[in-house]
Length: 317
Image 1 (cartoon, rainbow, N blue to C red):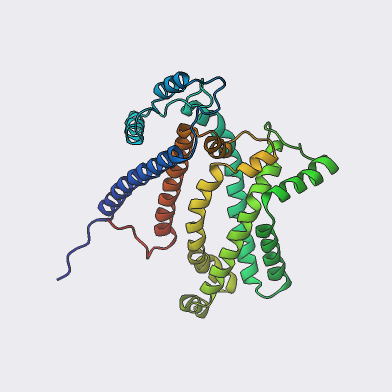
Image 2 (image 1 turned 135 degrees about the horizontal axis):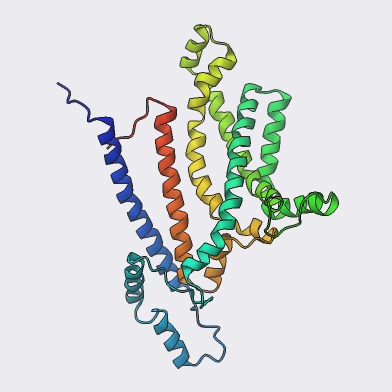
């Protein structure tokens, strides 16, 4: 006789507990690898110190706890992280890593949040319309536009948008950070390739669902094509898109170095590049912690949305 399945709340609690444990492990390994790799790179954070004698270098390394063996540096840093101390930046020495993230992250979160809404909404809409109008000029035009959006890099799209809408038409500001008008061009630039990815993914998924047996059954019961698609097909077709949107959200919310540079926005994207260039391990590790945390959270949301969108899918403990 088959044993009774545990109650769903118990399964959910077990699932969340396992995800919490695995998330801690992911963060631990990601930060560990980041710290070790940047410390193994040639050069150090104090090599460009003006007039830096050997004694000055030694004092700075001791102050920032970068003296001793690599293992000692690593264990000391991980012990500080366990106390929620992300340390000071070795480049911007009056700034803690928490203060740098607090200054840089809000602009990237706003920009990335708007870009995510644009990419997910327009991408799903264009993909669904293209699938419903397969092999028509609408489908061909949408997929051609998607191909162009994917093929043209942001460092070309950004200046083009500035030239047209800021310098020629004078509708929007060239760049910088201020009111809502400053967000429009960078958000569009950041979201364009992802609109294309989502649209193509949605189109292909919906085309597969339209051929499925359960949709034929829905049509046989008297539902119109629009009713069959809206009530049944979209919920299944959107599942691969939801899977993609989890990592996409984490990626967009942590900033884009290219877009932020083109539009003169001081955001989180610069932390990754500047930290590597300056051999500054602590802001880089802090940025990795933020990125991995967002990735974990959005992937968890994706898993929970799966069980909402498709009742056949349930989380398991």
